Image (cartoon, rainbow, N blue to C red):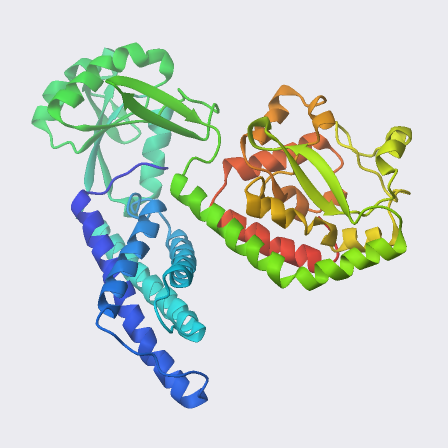
Length: 475
């Protein structure tokens, strides 16, 4: 349930507590690190300057911004402690990453990596402890019937019944249903799943005046939308928050956004990731990681190039022209793993394609060289694509790029995978590509990635990719 039931001043208090905890962790981590340094002698002392205070305050605000971007201050009535801890872990990870990036760009002075590791651990423990204390404290307060939000439910159908049952299962959310409204006058005064029907929809103004109502929850089907227009208008006039539990949007989109453009209400169906802040971080991760790997792995590139050149005729790199984001064509490269005439031979091998759909896949492909088999087993042939990631044509994580000839065989629903930037690895690759022989299943895995995308999902995929590569499972 993604509703927001939290007063602004509560959010501000929570943000202040998180910022104060993080600021204290910078100082506490210094004392732990200094003790560690004096015992191990691994580093020179850190010089503390007056501007350190402003840096601590600044980065504590960054931590709050990261929490805010994850909606950490929006739905505490409905979150679990486990989810709170996961948000803390993500915040610490991205916060430390931003700190390292800022240190690299602005040169804050000497800051040992060992200090940042200790700070990350201290920060995670402290914030987790803080969230645990607040979580149980608020549960105790709400069980004592304090900090309650009083709800008026509109509707006496299945949706209203499901809403009431959900609230009853989660008393710690602190929601209290004072009664219901109905579109059927015959039900007025009756009990509906333990809640009294206070009146018909036309009685809402009187009920709002006679009762304390914090919010109105409309639980009706779109077929009865004509009956609730009056409710929406009255609640707006009375200044009462209205929330809608409806099947209006169905499965059209994962996210819906309402914008007001020159006074016109515009509803947008969001089918792709649109969090600009998170996408910017994703791009920074692509730049830093691909750039770092291109430099560090350059000796390996040279060794692979020599092996390819010595063992078979043809170029070192296989150049492929593919289609990326929004059907934009681009050129990328892999280490060549097949004989030079592989593309011409493919026509004669189509009958041996084991993949159902427009993609070609073949077991024991005779076109693959001996060195190519090794490179494919450990996904070393994919490494030159890091250059495409650095350029911005690809991302580290995303659906596989599409060959132009494959696109002609796509069904309409397949094409949504072109709405995000392609990547070197994704859910399909870490799921074991040798087990997926149906292109539709492959596309569904890509859609699962698109619909559930987050920076945290990218990080998990990258770690699982490393495991898959080390096992020799290929990508």
